[in-house]
Amino acid sequence: MDAAVVYESMYGNSERVAFAVAEGLGETVRVTVLDVTDPAASPAALRHVGLLVAGGPTHAFGMTRPSTRTEAVQRATGAVSDRTTGLREWVGSVPHEDEARLAATFDTRVTRVKPLPGSAARGAAKALRRAGFRLVAPPASFYVGDVEGPLDVGELDRARSWGRSLAEVLVPAPSTATTP
Image 1 (spheres, rainbow, N blue to C red):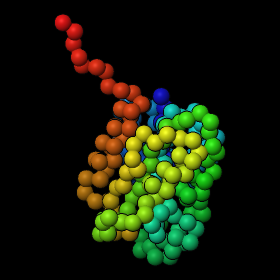
Image 2 (cartoon, one colour):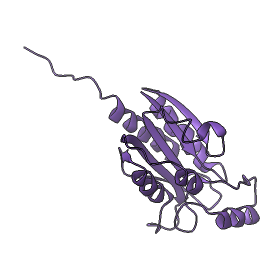
Image 3 (spheres, rainbow, N blue to C red):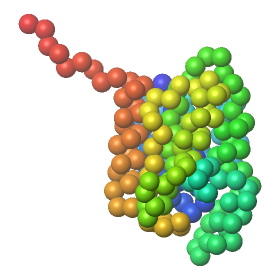
C-alpha cells in the first residue's frame, strides 16, 4: 500500500516533521512527500494512495489562513515561505469520497504554551473526516521552541516513530505465535 505525506510549512519545521514521518512510514510502505502547493499534491493525483497524511503549522488556534500567513511573513526574522495556499485550502479542496480512505494528521506548535488551544491537526482531521476519510490515529502535535522554531529536541525522532506506527496500521506485523 502506498502513502503520501502532504504538508504546509512556513519556517521549515512542518516540512522537517513531514519528511521524518515519511522516513518512519517508508520503512514499511512506499511513500511520497509533497508540499500542498505542488501540483502533484492535488487530491485527484493522490486518489491512489492508501494512506494520506496531512500536516502543517498551527497559527491562531488552527490551520493557517491568508491573514496569518501574511502576518508570519511580516514577522519573520529568517527565511520564510511566502505562500498563498496552505493546508486549510488544500483539505478544503478534497472532494467527498464514498469509499472510505485512510488518513492521519499532524501539526507543529509552540512549546511555551501547553496545552495550546486549537490545532491545525484537529482541524485538518475534521475536514478529512467530512470528506469520507477514516482517521487511523489521533491528530499528532510536534513542538517548536518558538514561532520560527527550532523543533524541540527529540521531535524528529518522535515523528519518525509516529510514521512507523502509522505503517503498522497499514501492514500489521507478522504474528510471532508458534504452534506446538
